[in-house]
Amino acid sequence: MTDGLWNGILALRAALSRTTPPVHFACLSASGEVSLNKPLSADKVVYIALDTGAHDPLPGQAHLQRIDTLRFSIRKHGDFDAVVLQYLRTYLPYLFLPQMADQMQRACTVAHFAQSLDGKIATESGHSKWIGNDENLVHAHRMRALCDAVLIGGGTLACDRPRLTVRHVAGEHPIRVVVGRPDADYDSLLKACDQPIFVYGTTKACVDAPVDYTQLPDSPEGRACSLRVLQALYSRGIRTVYLEGGPTTTSRFLKDGAVDILQLHISPMLFGSGMGAVQFAPIAKVDEAIAFHSFTFEPVGDTMMFVGIPENIQQSVPVTPEVTATPKSQ
Ligand SMILES: NC(=O)c1ccc[n+]([C@@H]2O[C@H](COP(=O)([O-])OP(=O)(O)OC[C@H]3O[C@@H](n4cnc5c(N)ncnc54)[C@H](OP(=O)(O)O)[C@@H]3O)[C@@H](O)[C@H]2O)c1
Image (cartoon, protein in one colour):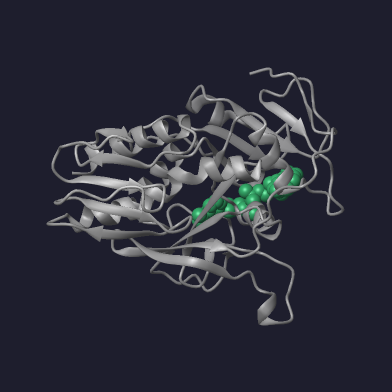
């Protein structure tokens, strides 16, 4: 069932990212056919209303009305497969992130972690393969295919030697983005595919870096501001970013208000020690915590994933001219 539907979601993503509003509704058939502003006559067509009250669904179809960034209300008409509806509930929200990026004038991010019940994402020694289950791996690859770029920190690059490609699902490999140093070992990414590798950091550029490095202004803590990274990516046409950790990078993005949606996959295991998923300076009161709204709990195989919108999202910071790019040498 899901192969045709997945191809349809990819096609819908492509269509929506080419089309500027108003799109009154989109049709996605269970076999993956997509049309905008034009109803299909096939059985089991899903209408995605993008404009409140624009059109009514036809009998025998499901009508998904978008409520906010993450939620759809679903009015069912006739017999409609619950698995298909769950699938659409899980992946459709991300198709609208490019529009949000245009409004915010920066790339939008979805951050993902696989963590234990006690909030650990790796052992003390940095071992993390695999905390999530097979379904979570496939989910992560689907998200890579739905985003323009995948972003990781230099620590994850060094520890995990990831490829950051789409291997388990159909779709295009994303652009790879690393926050770190230009002279790190990028071999695992360079060998994996031909997609560009963009690196952002605060250290000076080195001439023989094998990647496209941009030096950003230093913050008082010696780190690049996450919102500046997202603005720099947006200026290169990257509107959606899947942020795959590690904790130093994602914590920094969360504190900067630069995570738009958080996905926390929770595995049924206890570490009792290890690396915490999120690392902030100590807070004194509960109301200083980052709270979430519009959250859901999505099934991922026999486990679950928390998906929520942080309440501290920031739009962008004033653009300064000191963002400098070195010539690309890859
Ligand atoms: N379970 C999971 O879902 C999951 C996902 C990803 C990673 N992990 C695990 O996480 C561990 C690595 O975590 P980590 O926190 O050490 O690494 P990390 O967040 O991937 O990388 C941290 C490094 O990235 C660079 N960096 C990050 N933000 C920066 C900024 N704003 N400006 C400039 N540089 C920045 C810095 O490099 P420099 O210090 O070199 O400048 C920093 O030390 C590994 O064990 C990995 O397996 C687990």
